[in-house]
Amino acid sequence: MPVDIVVVGSCNLDLVVNVEHIPQVGQTVLGGDLQRIPGGKGANQAVAAARLEKSVAIVGRIGDDESGSLLQKNLEDNDVNIDYLFSSTGVPTGVALIAVQGDGDNTIVVSPGANSKLTPEDVIAAPPIAEAQVVLLQAEIPIETVLAAAEIAKGIVIWNPAPAPNEIVPLELLDLVDVLIPNKKELELLAGTEKANNLDSIVEMVQTFPCSSTIVTLGEQGAVVVASNEAVHIPAPDITPVDTTAAGDSFCAAIAASLVEGKDLIKAAQWAVQVGSATTLVAGAQPSLPTPKEVHQRLKDR
Ligand code: RIB
Image 1 (cartoon, rainbow, N blue to C red):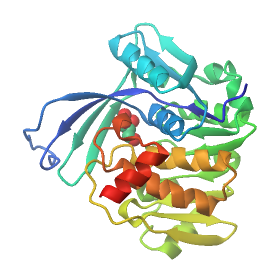
Image 2: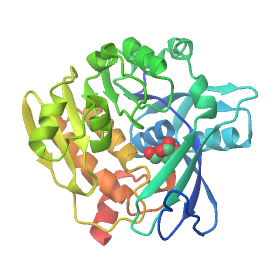
Image 3: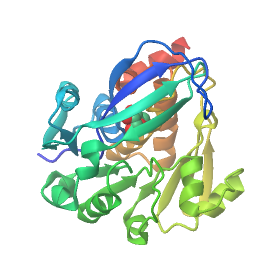
């Protein structure tokens, strides 16, 4: 039976240290104990969608090392189908070095490892992509592989261009995307201008893209949905975050899950803002991804 959502994306082992303040260039700071936490934008979005009660498969690559085995087991434990999680011999599994500071903000450096070996041939070898209702893509795998997955997809294509690609994004990719979900910085990088400082400029920038709809995430300010020449701001609940890691990932997964349920984009974004906010109230990438019940509970308890 086809799954609801296929994620084509990265798997990383997150090496996380809590610090009082993220160090400046040239500065050394002391932090807490090192934590090893399953992460990667692809795997996070897959696990998030599964916790939101959707059937999910991931297409990705890990290395044949201990980290790869740990990430694979974690995906299985979270009911994510791993039939198309390939293993690369002699290549390390992706790693993310994450510093989380007191106010929950972070910096992340990713060493892609096996994620960079996921090829267009791999996605061609994965029939679930063509069968899924929603295909969810990010930018921690080669851009040509993202494009190949979007070409194969017959359902709704969501692209979260995170981290913003350094190379020029092929226009044919943006043409194939039904819902683009950048944050403000990614929007500016995609548009090639640093002007996303108010709603009007965000809408103006979004309208230069050929995608049918865009949702710009704005962190504590919520999100803006731009579709059919209309822009709607969705505010976020007033919370004090513990760790913002993976909040963007659970947001994207909640949009995908909502579209599977037949919600419109505004309703989807309202739910996704709640899910993303609830994610910031618990530390660590995948440990923080909530079930629907946990979303309500965490926001009630805050
Ligand atoms: O979005 C958060 C994720 O970004 C982390 O889990 C890390 O692995 C990087 O991919």
